[in-house]
Image (cartoon, rainbow, N blue to C red):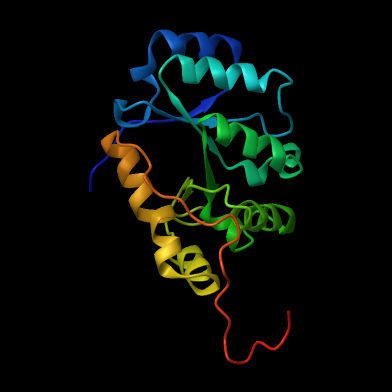
Length: 186
């Protein structure tokens, strides 16, 4: 097992300025990618400027678990705009299986179907309730779409971030669902 440095970077005035001054202190494996966590119940009106400041500081923000933020669940156009500006988006695997409730699950799928998701991560906190397992979410997404579409979200894109390489993967905005022989409805 290898452990790499990184953190969920909380957007606060003092931490933003410190990150711009000392990006290696906060970025994943010291390679320029920064996991950005919004406050759980709000989104700043100056978010565009904050993300631009981080990007201008040489960091690539990865917005972590937006599907669990009640404000971001309703702001897919904002997420799309931030991605267009150079940010990425990471969804928690447990959100796909409903561990964080129906709203987070629906938002995770909506973000994925819109082509906004670049990473799926465990956001593990322990070995019982919030485990590091990705298997169930991987299976659900691979079954719903394809393994070729799912693998980059779980393996290839995270590997590129650890190595400090660019994400070289584009997926369709609406991945084609694989139908089972018993699915007769829309």
